[in-house]
Length: 180
Image (tube, rainbow, N blue to C red; front, side, top):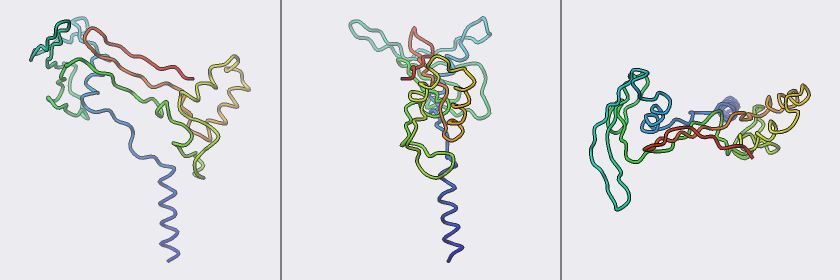
């Protein structure tokens, strides 16, 4: 009985320190991201392959709906979208989020510290909160960096912002939301 109980406690606490899956974008969102990361142009040898399907029209707006194929090649672990492998449905565009580290809005109630003792209530690890450590005069001093490294060793601090990729008709790029 003691063996079973100790094994159950070990497995329960072990799962607290080892997070599961990463935040993965959908295949459609990943295809939108490819157009920003690897732009389609004759300069880099990627032709524009687009099949028009329909144009939704109102009094002031013309919204073409089309299928486009990104000819940069199919990757081994690339998943197909709803319209096929390498194809993307263009119907107004989209905004996707690339999480760098942990989600920026993560606060202390959402994580567990590395020691495995439970929730950390003394710090907010997300970039929106932890950017305040870097956004001050003298952040690059030896004392400040040692202090920050000591804190970051105990708790997963996010030191880089998440990236938001915008891909819409006439607009393509990345934006970052600054920390608080």
